[in-house]
Length: 113
Length: 110
Image 1 (cartoon, rainbow over the protein chains, first blue to last red):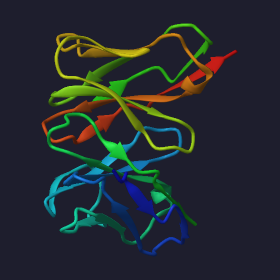
Image 2 (image 1 turned 120 degrees about the vertical axis):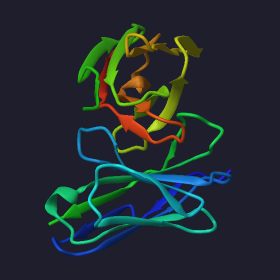
Image 3 (image 1 turned 90 degrees about the vertical axis):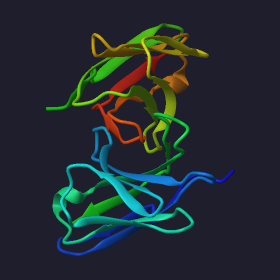
Image 4 (image 1 turned 180 degrees about the vertical axis):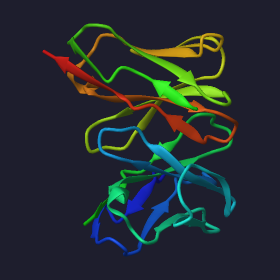
């Protein structure tokens, strides 16, 4: 069974740039969620994808967008980066039959200068 | 508004018992999950309660009272490896879209 993998693990960008983060979900999981975790805080829900459609969104602006592909992998795109976007971005996959249980990747740590 | 409250930090010695409380105020409630996160690591799932009562999984137990909007995670026979941050998270509707609390940092001392 392959776990959730994310890339890149670390990256540095400057204000105004754009970034794409990638995630491969755990085998057998058709739902992918993205979370932002600032240092010392809990993960904040960005959005969820189910069967290639956005299936819920948290309190994040439209410059945060995503995609899910037929193989259930996913991308998170952030445009016009701001300093406050510096955080750990976590991808989590889940199955409809496992309530409350998310399988997280190790995350992509983004630093915006 | 929506909020989850949990203590910011707890310190205990090896072998002790720690209880991490979580109170929530959300627009909907489906279930309460608990996650563990070591520094630099990914959050890992510990437990999920949808109904009132106690769920036991090895040294860790989780409790929920829906009427009190309250739950707790009980860590027994503490070990050094239990030093980590622990998060409660509410599932407001079916579909695993979780709202996390700010986390409780547990420090286990010898």
